[in-house]
Image (cartoon, rainbow, N blue to C red; front, side, top):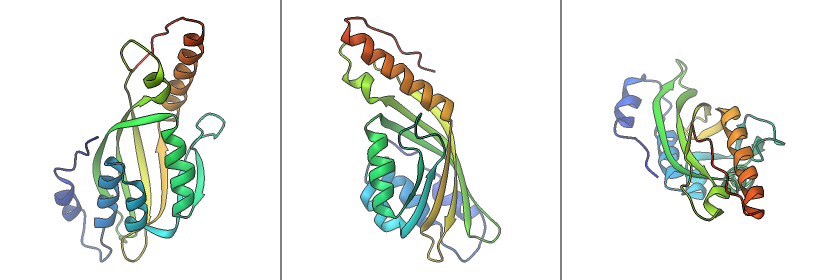
Length: 180
């Protein structure tokens, strides 16, 4: 996976001069892309971080609000990895609030359903969806709270397509994915 971080430092410098350092936020995204989730959470998030993934858990198994680094890792990242494999993350500018305590970042994720990887033959579909994250910073610049707003419709459709393909493969039928 790659993070398109060519200009992250320049973007950060251009966003204001509040006393809260945003570098841990940028480091977190870089580590998440490299799948260094534990390191990212330990270095860039407070111990009691609150992480919310918007969506219905019945539709998106890793949706919900998780408190603490371990809960975020176990219930959000590891649960998500059971269903989708992240291929790429692109971020837009990191926009710091005037008070320096909040950061908004938008971007895209490109991923493939794990079920598609496990299905024999044929091309593996890739999906891309947009997201926005609203982050609250601790005084040291680490992430204290993150609310993730993904394209829930796209995720739900992906999971439905993957589930149908797995079911069809049990009966010797190959379904194609409707990759957008």
